Image (cartoon, rainbow, N blue to C red):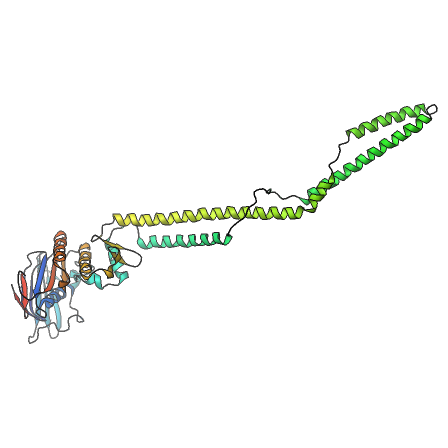
Length: 405
């Protein structure tokens, strides 16, 4: 349910001696020269609805009078009477049934930004952002999403630093991955030496047998039996010699042994380079994955903002605060700031739909028309003061505290 003002009556309040306003539209313009009572009327509406603020209103009672009052009738049949005497201020509120209510009951029906059209402008950047986020329905929590992004950025920075620390890595693909074992080479050399000794022994045995054969032949007559034996022995020794595997030449192995440590050191360095290259590739992949995560968060935020319904077109935000048409809200023109501030109150969708705007001259005719259209679309009343020398077409024109309709 929405509630608006059907009539507001001010008596001896600040500069106003008497004024009765019966709104007929959504944009209620209070015109007049400076010090004529326009601002006092807006102050009275705000004091009646939001409560008296002694800091803003130093002398509520019109000079020369003993008391003052603001009475407001609302569309739901309730009434508010803010009275002033030299001893202080009182509020009397009654609903349509005559039941009394107080300031807290009124406050519960107001926007969180109150009714001052410039309230949003007066907030700090962080407060403006909090106010906007309390209104806009986003598919994510901005603070949580920003924290998640920053965490990934820190992880990506660390990965990038590790990759830079590795630097350029030179790998020799021609080298084997396995080092040569000096023990294996020594064993091979010993085996070759053992085989060589076996061959030498076999050769010596063959030579000895051949010599015996020669001796026996000279003594063939006497040693025929011995000859046969030694011939058999020679045959067997020859067969054994033929069956003995010829060993590899140990010289190349010895040369390899002499350079094995240098070769193995090269292989170890190359294997380390291979591992560093793999680590760098892994870090590069991890960095790319983290970058993709950040881009996904940015896209989620962008898509969420694109889908969110802002109080007014062109409104956005970043980590620092509210943006309007791509620049910080504080850098927008005074007219645009005022339009956005009013839109923020409208977007809170309060029950009591009243806004007061001081210094309305910052708005040109186009902006006034826009404000009127916004108020009509949201069923709001916007009371705005404008400095004007003559009444012209203005419905409410003030002169020296008097309202001339």
